Length: 163
Image (tube, rainbow, N blue to C red; front, side, top):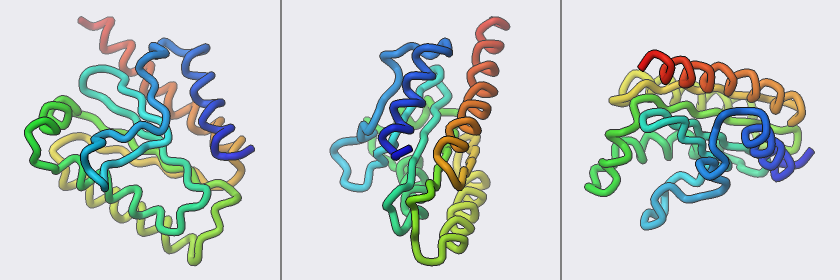
């Protein structure tokens, strides 16, 4: 399975087997087009007004840590138009997939660096920040992503029922 096939598979699963509205799922959309370093997640799912799920699929990136740190920069940006979205997000979930075709130098060191950055972000960002990493076959990553997403989607559905 390629990275693009994984994206499509996740999108199909989200639209056909979950309550996430199809028009909410964003594929390869730059979050803030006016900024060069704005994150371009492979998949962005705004679960509700205060929870965003971002999925990064690393298939060629030699420095996956830069895809993590971009979110830190993005969440702390001071621009007024950005503040509106940033202040909305009370929970950010970043999932990073490392497929078999990802053959970076010192892969373990790079993944450890991603985890280190994620821990720092969780301790320093003004929102709840969760990080998940998936390594290996993309088909296996798809199964793991589904199980993680189910938890967050169910959590949001239960939150709506409480209101």
